[in-house]
Image (cartoon, rainbow, N blue to C red; front, top):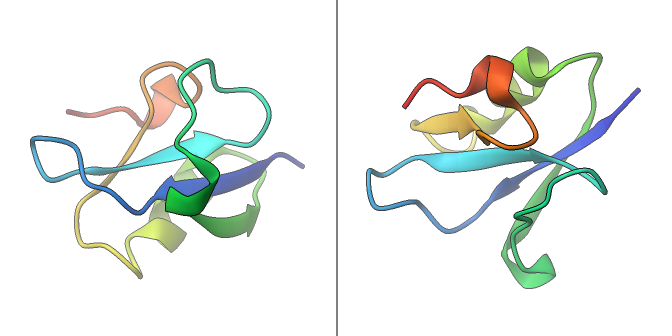
Length: 69
């Protein structure tokens, strides 16, 4: 199963982007990552990220199925 992390730094719109480890062409700096775990898809990773940040969203590049804004 793929591994995911959320960027600790919010985007301009307030979203914290969820990225797939070792897949994303636009990864967050390692110091700005909060590891979320292994999930069968980005939906579970975004749900986990929302436990830490109210506004979480999939990365348009590596988690497009969960990119909503």
